[in-house]
Image (cartoon, rainbow, N blue to C red; front, side, top):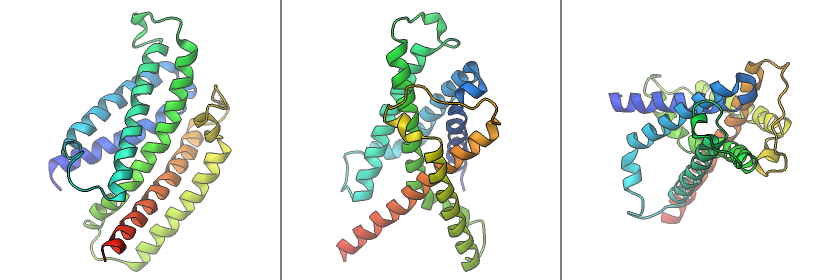
Length: 226
């Protein structure tokens, strides 16, 4: 593994952690939320610089079903990022408060929340699509293949996905995504760790979906070729 690959993995890990810590914003404080958000934006720019080869290939070559889905996902994630960034600047009371933007707080709050939750789901699906690649890199450091290890990983993944679906429903994330609720409910007596663990599980559910959906798309493309 070369230094560029290590940097990519490091950036992706930090982005995943940043995404999780952005969700309990009222529980960690507004200032911390803003600084994490600003850091996340810097990491996203770095992520795209490190993966610029993929960006340069947009519009070139043939588009398989998986490549179409990947491209659409990236485009939607970009929309969510821009929506979160612009609305976050409008709502800022710390980092960008010097701009003195007034009168747009209400619509900015709706946009910020909607983009945040859609971004959470879309980025998790994006991570799932690339999960096979990450598992392939991990296998290189694990020695000989093991059927037992493979089944343990599959059962663990299924368990996380099952609880993740439960957490997604328990936390009522769909209502935030569909703008049915304009304010996120936080239980301030709940430890932040429990909140983040539930969101980690919900992320795991969408990673699971993205992973197996991408595998299905690859298999269907192979069947059509043969």
